Length: 116
Image (tube, rainbow, N blue to C red; front, side, top):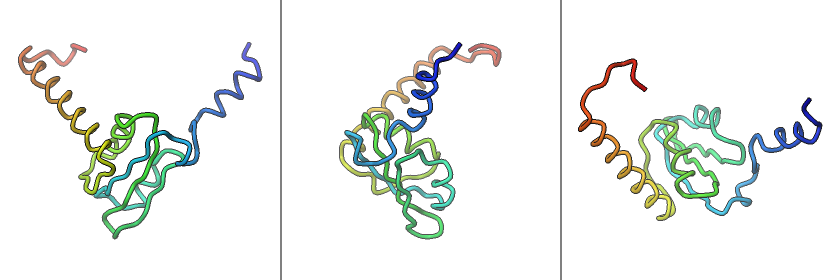
């Protein structure tokens, strides 16, 4: 049986923090998508600002720069004006890791579609 305390904890942690000021890292980027689309999928506590009809500024907090980078790239769109430098550095490190992973996969050769 699930206790009331467990249910409360799960409900309280659905969007762990709902204000940007509570995070140790705060980053932003212009995303080449309309603000209404980004706002629909943005996590709680983030901020979406209209730049023009096809672009918005997305600001979000997180526990790490890599975590913020992961949130920003989930929109699968071109980015610009990424701030601060720590977020750009995290994106560069992630890019390097993904590039190395691709090289390893290509070196392993083709796999059947049933392989994990």
